[in-house]
Length: 512
Image 1 (cartoon, helix red, strand yellow):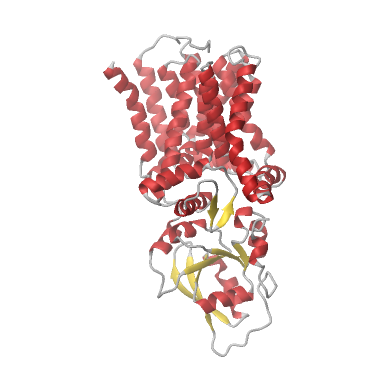
Image 2 (cartoon, helix red, strand yellow; image 1 turned 90 degrees about the vertical axis):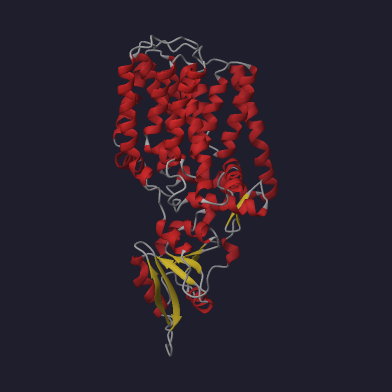
C-alpha cells in the first residue's frame, strides 16, 4: 500500500518540480503582474485585508482572494518575485489535480486522467499563467474544484461546491461562469441532474461572495461599482479597450503553443464527436468549453490570458478521448474503466507529453525574465542622489514594483494618453507631459525613463521650454535621463503635443 501511494504521488512531485523550475529567477511581467504584486505589498504594509491600493490609490479591478494569497506568501517569504509567483503555482498544481479528480470521478482510470492533466500542463497558456500573480488560474482552479465537489452528490458536496464557487467569484468575477454554464446545460443529463442541489450550490456561492461586495459598496460607493462592474464587465463587452479581437487569441496559439495547440485542437474535435455519441465526460468537457468560450465571444477586449478559461474543458476532453481509446467510453459515475492495457503505449504517451511540454515551454523554463531592464534600473543606484520619478510615453508598472516608490506615467504622445486615460487603475497615474510638469521634474532633479524611440520628441518638447535632455543611463529597451536647464535659453511659447500649460488637476484624475 505504501509503495502504491508513493508511485501515485511521484508524478505530482515531478509536476511540482516543473512548475517551480527557476521560479525565483528573472523578473515579473511589466503588466498587471507587477500591479497586483505591488498592491499586495501595499496592503500588507498597511495591514489592510478588505481592499487594496496601487500607488496609494484604490484598486477595484479584482476581488480579494488573490491579494490575500499574495499577502500571505509575502508575509512568509518577503515581498519578492518568488512570493508573488508561489500562489499561482499552488493554484496551478491544484487545477491539474481537479482535472485528474473529475476524470476519475466520471469513469477514467488513473492513467487516462493523467492524459488530460498532462495536456493542460504541456500548454504554454497554463504554464506561463500558473507562474504569474494573476487571477485566471486561481479562479479557474477554485471553480473546477467546486465542480468536483458538486459531482460528489452529497450535502457536503453541495456546501463545498458553493463555497469554492463563491471564492472563485471573489478571485475573478467571471471565473465561475464556465462551471455554472456547464451545470445548467447538463441538467437534462441524468448524470449531472440535480436542480435542487444546483440551486443550493448557487445560493451558497452568492452567500459567500456578497458580503465583500456589499462591504466595498458601503465603503467606496459608486467608485467601486463603476470600475468593478461598469468598466470590467459592461465597458469591455462594448469596446475593445486593449486587444483588437480574436486575432490576439490566434496569434498566441500560433506563436506560443506549437504542438500543444495542435493536440488541443484534435482532442476538442474528438470531444464533439464523443459528446454527440453520449459520453458523459465528453459532454461535460464540451459544456465547460462552451462556458469558457462565451465570454471570449462577448468581450471585445482580447487578451491571451483570457484563454485560461478553456483549459479545464481541454483537459477533460483529452481524458475523454483516452477513455474512448482504451474502451472506457461509458462515462458513468463510478464505472471501473477498461483493462489496464500494456505499459508501452502509456510510456509512449508520457514521452510525447514530456516532449511537447519541453518544446512549448522552453523559453519560460530557461529564462523567466520578463522585465530585465526595469528591474536593473531600479536595483542599480541612480546617478548622484536622484530618484526615478516618472516615465515618458511608457506604461511600465514593473518600475513601481522594483523601485518600491510611486512613479507617474507622463504622456507626451496624444496616442499614449488616449489609450490610457480611460483605464481606471491609471487615473491619477497617467499625467499629461505639459511644460509645467516637465519644469517641475527638472527643478526637483528627478529622473525620467523612456524608450529610445521617444527621445527625439522629448528633446523637442524640452527644448521648447528652455530645457535639454541629458541621458544618464541606457539599456536596450530603456533610457534613463534628466532634464537640465539651458543657461541663457529663452523658452518659446511652443508647448508639447498635449497642449495646455497647466496639467490636469490630480483630483480630477482620481476615481469618480
